[in-house]
Image 1 (spheres, rainbow, N blue to C red):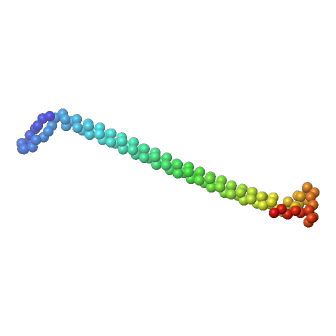
Image 2 (cartoon, one colour):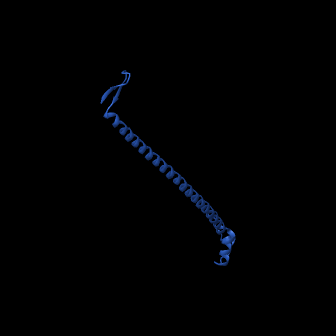
Image 3 (tube, rainbow, N blue to C red):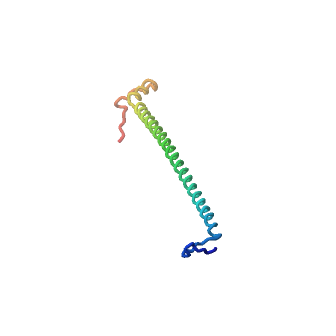
Length: 114
């Protein structure tokens, strides 16, 4: 490094090899900063896209689960109706008389158990 005087002789300017090295260091720091910012931007963008895809995928899964719930509810209603139909006394009596050839008991054949 060397010191030089200005024309007026009152100011000292620092010149030398160090002043040439500084810009390279600044350029290197700026390059590193720019690279880090780009990695951050790309990472943030990828995370945002991934989260949006997850939201859409979960939306589809919820939609499918709701469709399945409606189908199962409908099947449950049909099965309850079938149970009520199969339990009806008129049907049971008809099967007993026609298929099993049973007859209604006489009053003296009925035994009440308490």
